[in-house]
Image 1 (cartoon, one colour):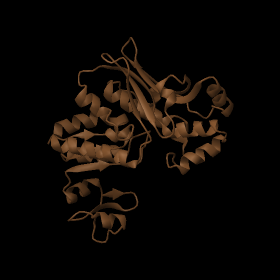
Image 2 (tube, rainbow, N blue to C red; image 1 turned 90 degrees about the vertical axis):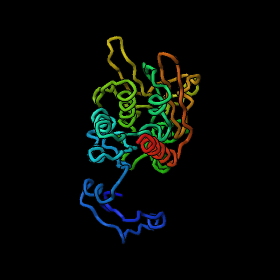
Image 3 (cartoon, rainbow, N blue to C red; image 1 turned 135 degrees about the vertical axis):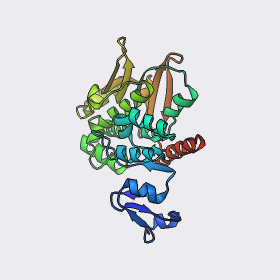
Image 4 (tube, one colour; image 1 turned 120 degrees about the vertical axis):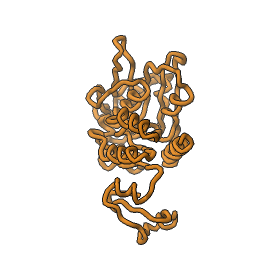
Length: 295
């Protein structure tokens, strides 16, 4: 295991759940970096769950690349490597006879990437739209209920859905990164962060939210991507006022929803209702089982 605080640690017989819960690492050996750790641990798979760096994808990309170069499966919940190095890392995994998988990078452990990879392999994804950032959901609902913007952000932080610095959520960066991950993998878009037209929710007022609700509508931070006639994928993140008959308008709290347009299914909708940490953990487990079963 490795962390910013503890460094890279290995144990000959593994770490028992009891010692992990007690943070007892007295018997652990310390490695100097990820390459040494992979050798010392004799790892078969690397689980990469470091924090997102939306600008560069590091250090997650370096960790995953090191594992793949050593012929070790790399499983990630981090969107950064998918956004900045999806094709490179996928090609490297294929060359080394191992897997790079990342189901938990978007919508926790909901099987989106594997759905199209394994169950709908001949489908053409022409576009999608969704509500993929739970922090903005919680903030907008709090403001609609009478809280100030700042109070609503604090509520989201207290619920554990917003970071101590919620800027990436509020300004739409997190949502844009998810759009890129989905578009690059499912639509071979090749998008970068600057390619996504982005507007956050900071300009939405409580009065706008109440007026929309009185008219049978709701404001949501909507993610979209669609292939244009020239073949390019056009993507955006922006607040939209939606009619309550729209499935995207009905998602609340920490829930998420995405609607795909394909050549076979005009509208294929996936909704995730109030996920917990176990959902992300399940996505990692599912990827691990996929990787080892294909070995």
